Amino acid sequence: MRTPWGESDSVEVIAPGIAFYGTPSHGGFHIASNLLGRIRPIWQAYARKWSGSAQWYEEDCAAALVVIEFPEHFTDSQIEDATSTRKWLETTEEIRDTLRQVWTFDFP
Image (tube, rainbow, N blue to C red; front, side, top):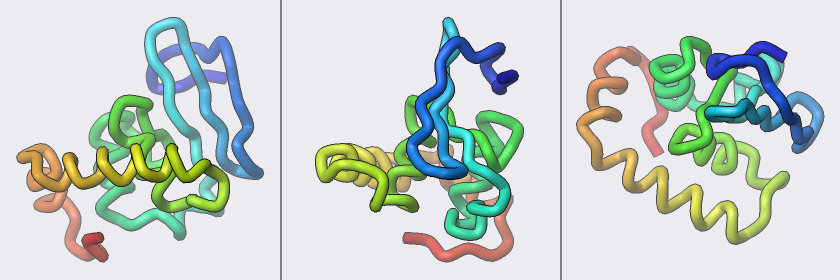
């Protein structure tokens, strides 16, 4: 599958509509369009900033947002790590820039 980071060389289906794609250089989650309603607009905007789409969440930071929004598919340890990443993101200027682009959101 074509990803924002190139052609995928691996895929792990987490749940229907949620899959993690790897490429030789990077990777991230792909979220089916019918599930986007579960992801807060601010996080969709953040994903769009780095991948060009609200459906792709890169593995370094944005992937944590998928874990937070779909906790039933992840371990307690993954949720803890994701929560730490989200808290860090909320302190960065980067997220403030993203906030300015979103006119309505439910900030966690």
